[in-house]
View 1 (cartoon, rainbow, N blue to C red):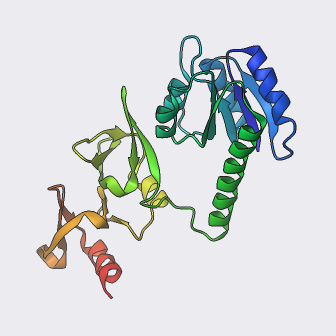
View 2: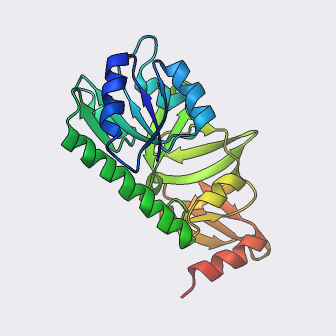
View 3: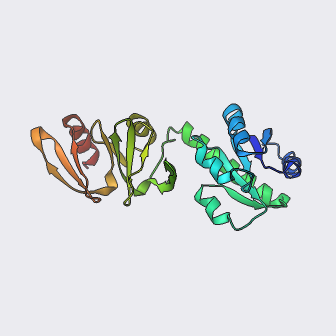
Length: 240
C-alpha cells in the first residue's frame, strides 16, 4: 500500500516511518508537514493510505479531508484523544494516540489490509458499487455531512449541480446524475427519468399516470414522474 505520512512534527514523522518499515505491505512514498503540502503530495502520489495528524498550523487534518475529492484510507495519528469520535465520523479506519505503540499500529494496518482485500474481491466479482450500507461525504459550501446512502431518498438535477435529498437537508453537489447512476446499486437506486434517481426503499405509493407512465410518491413528500421508457424497466424490477 502506497502510504503518505502527514504531520507537522518532523520527529513524529520519522518515528512513524521507522515503525512502518517493519510492515512489508506498506510502502512509504512521501511525507508532508502541512495540509497544503499534503494536498499536493496526495494529488501527485495518489497514496492508498495516509497517516494523518489533526492539530497542524493553519489547517487541521479534518480540513484536509474536506478539501479532498478522492480520499485515501485514513488512520489518524495524534497526541490528543478527544477527537476520536469526530475522526470516525470522517470514516477513519483507526485512531492512534502518540506515542504510537507497535501493537496498535499493527492492528490498524490489519484493518486497512482487510478493507483493501474486500474491495479487490468486490471488483473481481463486479460488485464494487455503493450499497445502502455505505456512507458518503457530502459537501455544499461550508457545510458538510457524512450520510448513509439508506437515508438518501432522491438525487435530482439542479442546473449544473445535483441536489441530494436526505432528512430536511438538500445540499447540492457537482457530481452528474450519470456518474451517480454508475456508482449506485441498481437494486436500491432507480433512474426514474433524465432528472431524478430515487431510492426504492423510500417509495410510499405508486399510481398510473399519463400514456402508460407512473407517478411515484416518496415518503419525504416528493412526487416523481417515471418516464414511459423507464416505467417498463421499473415494472420489471418490482415484479415477482
